[in-house]
Image (cartoon, rainbow, N blue to C red; front, side, top):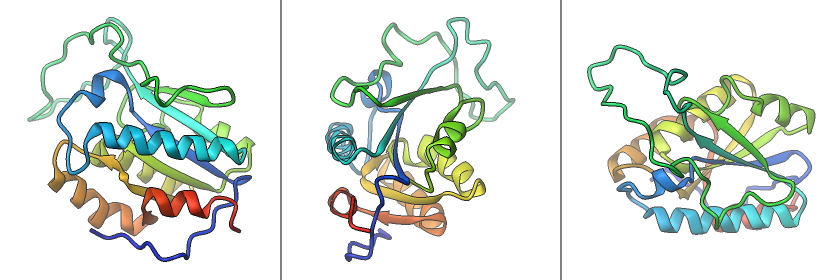
Length: 198
């Protein structure tokens, strides 16, 4: 796994935001690897609390279409899968995470959190230069958001042990082949220790 845990990371709470991807009831109940969904929720909650304590911006992203599903992405694809309306509560952010006072909630309708949302506007108006990303799934929601953030010029830190995918292989590929090329991959402990050490 490509991850550096030396003490080279310094994060300014005034210009750094935590962006948590899709830790919601309907997703955390799916199979996950290499990290369990429960451990990812626990670590993401620790990160969010640490960011809040130093006054840094916390963004909680969740995904869900309208009730009729007409605003979801519907390309012709070999492995698109069947769609059925989500169960009630499917898109609710897990209570361990929040939201808490001061958090910003983003609802998206596709993998990435930038397109069709106010995420970029909220980050730029607060002077955010660095985003710390975690959540589920590493190779879908996290990676799609990261690619968009990269193209918008944000510095990025990916919290490897606060991300997971449907399989260990999918997670590892996203970390090693994509995310480590567009940002820094670190652990929960390293990120928490870096907050305020600029």
